[in-house]
Image (cartoon, rainbow, N blue to C red):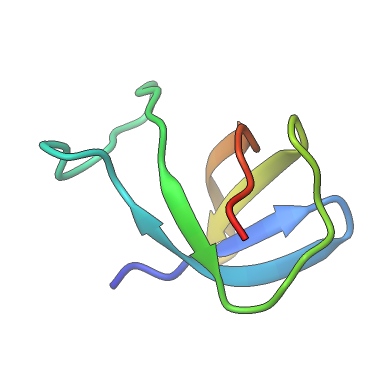
Length: 69
């Protein structure tokens, strides 16, 4: 597993990413819908923007479309 940092407003938390079936890799410019599981609870709502960072670099960005408890 890939476990990047997710940045929501002023909070960051590690999470895992599950890519859609049939997708093995995402490259710059791609748009995908992912499922993520965070290792700690974070207050959020739909439409909240976030950044995905790895090794001090932003590798992705998105917005929350659904929250599964």
